[in-house]
Amino acid sequence: MKQAEKFGRPVITFINTAGAYPGVGAEERGQGEAIARNLMEMSDLKVPIIAIIIGEGGSGGALALAVADRVWMLENSMYAVLSPEGFASILWKDGSRAMEAAELMKITSYELLRLEVVDKVIAERGYFAKEVAETIRQELISEFERLQKLSEEDLLQERYERFRKY
Image (cartoon, rainbow, N blue to C red; front, side, top):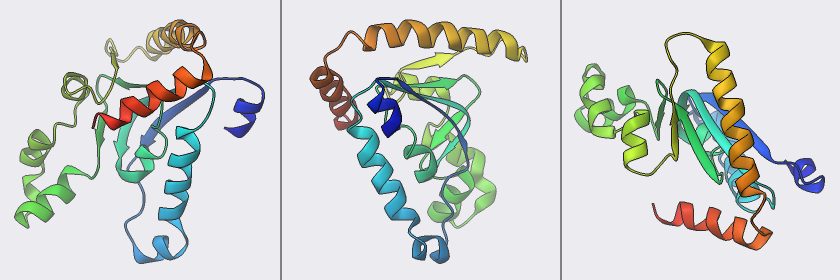
């Protein structure tokens, strides 16, 4: 990402992760610090960033890659701080209530668009990956053209404000 900044190139992240491992060993090896450092670095990059959730966007692993000027989701993706099973286990001590938890969590693309957590939902039109990829390509070109017109100061301020509204 620093090289992208050095050469004035935009950054694209494609997110598909269950998230950071929730174990003591991972924390002992600095997982939390690595995620925090990435959040800090991405928030200060002076080039446009677009994050696209293409599958599962879970936990700190997804958040670490989604500090962006725009966050998009494929329509059949999900984005959450923890899995519905984990949520149900914590809230009701019953992981089998995952579907109920998912409804409460509002983790689907259109729910998150309505809540302004994501900026765009990309229709998947069935299973035609080539068409979805072409749609993403066209949308990226168009959005990067808009973002590159902003001054560095305005770009960083808009990114900051995007995340402050949560």
